[in-house]
Length: 353
Image (cartoon, rainbow, N blue to C red; front, side, top):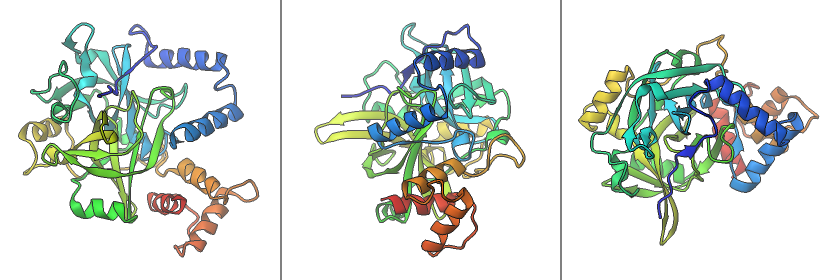
């Protein structure tokens, strides 16, 4: 059984993104979900209990490079920046099944740094390219999923403010490293039920490949809204995208999530159509960058680090954030810097297993 990961939205097409988010915030506040800090913490705890996921701060890199693609006021998917103006997402997110047509770029708006009722980094979509062979009317399967990709070109270079992610081809060595604990497979997006909050799975398992290794089967917990989100590899303090989420299947062996390998975008060895789409958007293979210094988005995942330190009992109100980091680093035999980083995040993920 195939489940679409496209999520319907309560926003109308007549609403601007900020106004729509304000309406959403009002509804949630009226329901008692976001009335204050304690309510926010309760919501985060509920998310962790139900899914094993944690809330992350969408205004901290690398999460700031992942955003909501609002689609015609009728739904949303997740997408991620791979350049100043370039976003990757799933092609089926761009299809209007009610009217049986592909949406035009004027119906699409990409929002980075979207956390509850606030955001500051966003852009309309000026153009997009998708796989010509993708059939949005066909039932979802590992076969039809292989062409389920789209490259968006944004009207504004918001990647300077939000940062962007590096694309990397997964190989047997990197996946073996992940299985042995030397690297970590992550995913983050705007899932159904938590559409105003970015949440992440920090310990996914790679289960194999499909479609002549063009697809990656994994065990990340996905839901509607996660289509187009990145499958991430964190190794040696560096984060890369290895897959683009397009499938959520129920098989005879249980649940299987599927991502397209981003190797299809690699110049020289990828698929010509995908390579050209990425090039025309202005993005470069293998290039990632944190937000510009002094901008609104932070350059390190400080809140995620704090969440994991709290899980380990090192951040409990008796000492500050820096002291908790230093205590963990000293105990793990790491250089003691007291600073959050992607490298530290990897060590904390390993410690929580």
